[in-house]
Length: 379
Image (cartoon, rainbow, N blue to C red; front, side, top):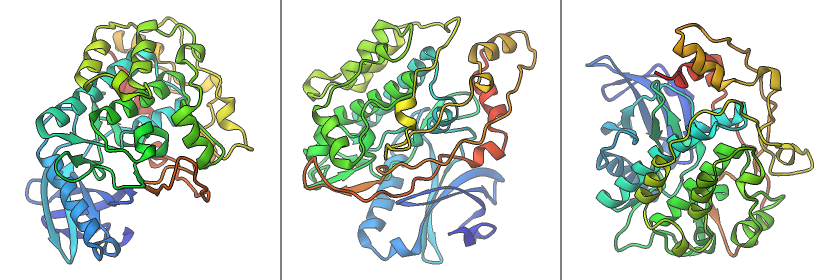
């Protein structure tokens, strides 16, 4: 799909590819009539031969169009030209949460709680107003805009609850790392599956680690449905007990023990009133970096070059430029399990390892550190 860069589609000029997934390629572009910068998602011709992909692509556009919330990406237009289906949406200038975690290992808990509250509020509106569940909440689908506000992206796997079952029997959709136990078993889903996924994201934000890993799919799925969960407070110093309780409630294996809706989780997060810590200690992530471990996580950056969030806050208050560390090129890693649709016969299934792209490496080339410093500036 790289050949589309520089071409026009509908009333839009496609400038460069900024992302791609199982359901399409996303370009940064410009609305020709208004000169507005937009993101344009295109369904490749190879997928357009399959009616199920066409239906899913159209459904994604319709779902986003029906949602109006500041933390959900907005859609402007949809159409078809040259046998290519596309839709145009707002262009979000900022990194994904995956980029921040990849480069820095973890996020200070007061910021993690704020981000999680924004995500929860977006999920609550989607479910209560449109009966929509996202089904693919993960750091790669959560972006920070230029003002530091979260945007929930990629509704390609989202479904509006109705007469059709949400999960096709014996099929798992979304990223396995953030899949709820009921997703793994192939049960019918509701909004509490998204709450579980958000709990996993919040766990990862504050600890720098995913709660469950495994050398192979059988081990990982077994850990998710029945393995021990290390409390986040055991991995990071000075974690708020109330924040830990929120995480563990959202991640309860029995969905009846989770928050009834994401709005309740958002309210609990808003009541925390966390403040920046005087010091922030990143957890030990050596378990994620072992070369003998198939599920390998991003390496920690050297301590001397890790972004000091508190220094950024102080510099912002004084209206002085903070020291800008030189970005470190992360080592190439592998992740065997982030596939959008996985045939699942049972919670123990052999898999073949596949290559995982490093998230948003291009952001480094466009001054990611400068943007991150600006994102965390306190006004």
